[in-house]
Amino acid sequence: MEYMLHKDYAFYYYLEQYVFGDIVVMVSPDADKGCLPELKGKGCRQFENFLLAQQ
Figure 1: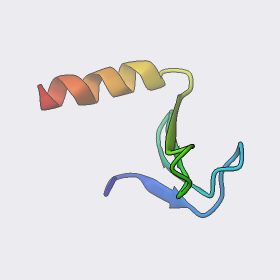
Figure 2: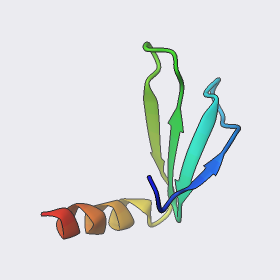
Figure 3: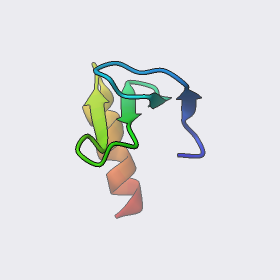
Figure 4: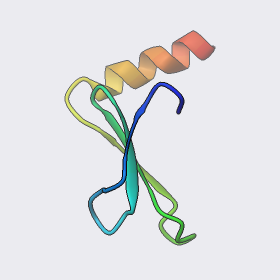
């Protein structure tokens, strides 16, 4: 989270979002919504590399 860009707006009735490249994580304080990760373009490969780096 510390490397992601924070924005005070989001889509789909979420309140804020965190962005890193093609990875977007939208968050809401509403327990029913929680968080919504959205991987655009090469976001799947970026996320895969983060997971591999963490083993």
